[in-house]
Image (cartoon, rainbow over all chains, first blue to last red; front, side):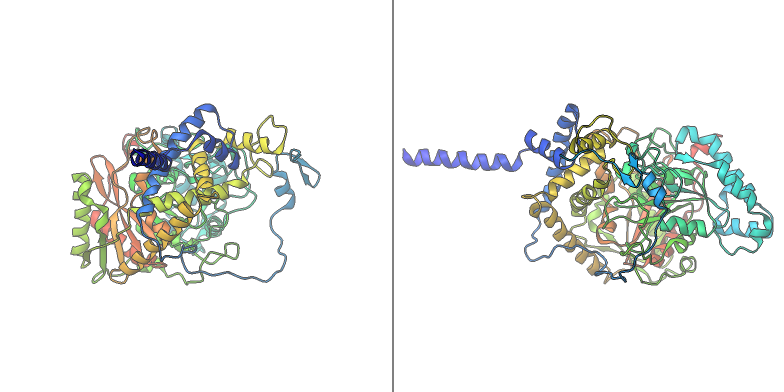
Length: 116
Length: 487
């Protein structure tokens, strides 16, 4: 009897594990992602993106089947290493023009919303 | 003589001989533009008044002494490239009305060589898409069939060239965005090696994958434009010191004895019989020219797409952080504090695909998931790079279709993002490992053009140009886009 119960427990734990592995992105995860991404989403967008992002994640999950145990991540593709230059100031662009691109400008300052 | 069918070299010769003026050339292209643009919408912004003024200033006297093949030539520039004083939107509403504060290096080189800008070509928003349907403004229509997409993200560029609104255009390619629309529109699209052409002034999508390159009506024209835009740039530290070649000489190089590899993994048999037939015909043309065609094994070719859809969104999420409504661009109306200002501005003005990719990138880089997704993808990237390097030990170039099918219908692939992503299956590998690629039209499938693709070794644009030239010569003329023949 105890073995039977233990067996059921084991199945329950396993199915919980498997369910988590194939679960789509949860509502909370999507909300969290939207905030991290600094994107305010409408309700329809939230539902749509939840489905679509889950599909995309399922698609890229195929990478998990590839053995990369002895492989180093590749960061640069043409073998270039750190490129150095002299630490000398160079003039660039029209300062006024650059400042003028800002939606809200005050003299030489660019205005933003309060942070606190 | 049909002015709009002349090559860059022919235009230059006619100008120097005094048979044509720059105004004649601009006029001929404007004629096509006026008759077609309302139906195909290849441009977000044009300024024909400005270009006509410049054309008048380029008198025969000035042209007589010019040695630049690009002098006086009307061109399009994809709207992801900065053009000083001219609206640059990257196809996005968030930059509507934004005037660029400097010019991209590659574009400046064209201007220095005398090219005249017609305007900014339409594209998928921030170059994210494979059909130009993601443009924040309007879709562009395929000139061979208006109900179909021109491809993307450089759809406006490819369309403008195919419709003879411009002599050539400059686009960008992060996962196939120059080559795929070139295939769909019956024109040549060249993605140079990463580092060949400066990315300074290219509004960045994915910084380890982006590439700037020409879309032209012939391989020879692509060679001329490539010559003009290559070079080390101190403003882009990922540009190479590797010396460029004289590409316009290289295209006539004999291909006899060259060996090309068709990857087993492209699974030709799964493609339509018309595509298979066309691809086989191209192989026959190459063999007739003395090229040896073998099968190669790129075991992880198909995984390149999954690698791309992890690494690219990760880099996108980082690059898109600059659009915060503070220093440039549109802003949200009501927001009390900085965080809600960011969220409302980006939420309101960025399109769906851009948002999806930003969130995907944020996810794969987030704590707890970074190893599983981002680092994993970077490891598979190395595996693919090693496989490619090994294959190039045996062959001079890879040969495969550019796309699995010709142009699909507008709206056909917008329901499921993955359907759209799959159209990049043959192109992304070039961006993942940084090698050059060219799409050249091989013929028609029904009434739609179709392109085949050569991928070359790093910095070996010369070989793929020579091979593409063979296909073009054997193919002969393509039929005109319906929109032109119906005029």
